[in-house]
Length: 68
Image (cartoon, rainbow, N blue to C red; front, side, top):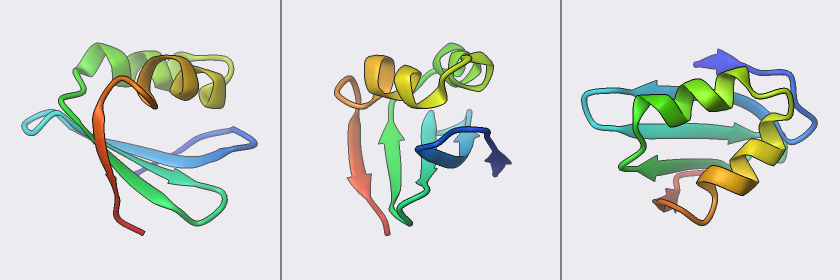
């Protein structure tokens, strides 16, 4: 888990062997996104606005499920 500075996201994690991105939100919800490649994770980590990046490039682009 990598803590991030964001008003919306609390932390992220990436499993390169399964291409799974896990996102912890400040609301307490946790989502897994499937089929996410390393460059998307790297973009999220380096984005000035993590929430905006998530909304633009991840939220509606990958299969996901809420795990908490």
